Length: 445
Image (cartoon, rainbow, N blue to C red; front, top):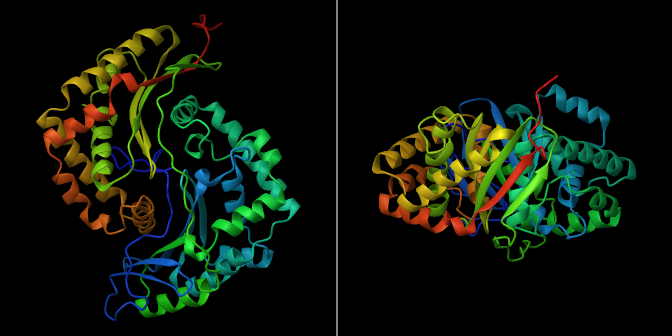
C-alpha cells in the first residue's frame, strides 16, 4: 500500500484507493496537439487519463476498479482480492510465455476503496498486450482450480502478515477505528471468510464492479496520442458499460476500549498510538503528509529522540494512512519488552506535547522542503508517476493535483498546520496497541 509522500520514502503502508471514475470530464475526442496530457472517456463510459512521456520506450497502463475492501460483504472478507487476482490470470500458457518474452510486468494492489492492476511493457508490444488483457477482463475464467489456488496463496500471505509485529499493529489500529468495515480488514481475508466465498459470489462481485463505468485507465507512454487513443478504444471499448459503484458511508469511530494487547512470541514489543483522520481533500492530504514527516520520518523529527537520545526504541516511525472517506494517523516504535511501559509513557508525552504546542516555524519549513523533494524523487519513473496520478484521481483529488502539489504544500501556513494537529491528535481519541510477549522474557540460554 502507498503512504503519503514523506521525506524518507513514498512507497509503504499508506493510502487506500477509491478507484472511481473522476467527476471532471473532457471531450470524448481529445483535441489534436494535446500530446502531453489528455483525459477523456471511451464510448462505454470508461475514464482514461493519459500523459505523454518520451523518457523511455516503455508504456505503463494502470487499470483502477472502484470498490475494494469497502465493497466486500461483511461475512466474505478476501473477496475483493480473490476476484481481482482472477482477472490477472492468463488462460493460455503460450500467451503467458509470449508476454514474458515481450518484457511484460504485471502487478496487483487491493486496498480499502479499490483494486489496481498494473501493466508495464515495451511500447512496441503495447497494442497486442492491451488487446489481450482487455479480453481477459471482459471474460475471465472462474474455474475451481484457479479459485482454490488463489485461496491457498491468500492463506499463506495471511500467515506471513501475522509474523510481522509492525504489520499486526497497523492492522489492529485499522480494525479498532473501522470495526466491521472494509477499511479495517486484511486484503487476504480470514480463514472463515475464504471458506464462505463460492464461485457465484465471485461472479456477482466481478460483474458488479469490473465494468467500464466503474473503472479508470491511467496511461504513461512515449507513443503518439492518436495511436495510443486508438489502441485503448479498440481494446477496452469491449468492456461492458455498467455504472459506478456507490460506496457505503464509512467514518472512523473512536473505540470504547482504548488499549489492546496482542500476544506474540518475541523479544521485542511494538508500541503504537493512532488517531482517526477525516475524509481526503487536497488540503488534508498535504497536511497529513507534513505531519507524518515532522512527527516521525527520520532524524530530527519529534519521535527520533526516543531512539537517539533516550534509547527507548530500536525503530520509530509515523504513518498517515488515507482512504477516500477517512484515515488513520499512527505513531509506532519497537522496543525491548522490559521497556514497554516506559516507552509507552515517553511516546504519549511526545504526542501530547505535539498536540498542545504544534510545530515550530522551523519544523514546518523542514517538513515542507523534505516533502517536496521526496515527491520529486519518488515520481522519477513512469510507473511511480502513473500510480500517483491514479492515487490522486482515486481519492477524489483529481489527477491534475500532481502538477499543483508543490503549490499546495507552499500554501500551508503555520497556523493552519497547528490547527490541523489540534484537530486530529487529541489524546482523547488515541487508541493504543501493544504487540509482543505477555511477560518480560528471561535471558537467552
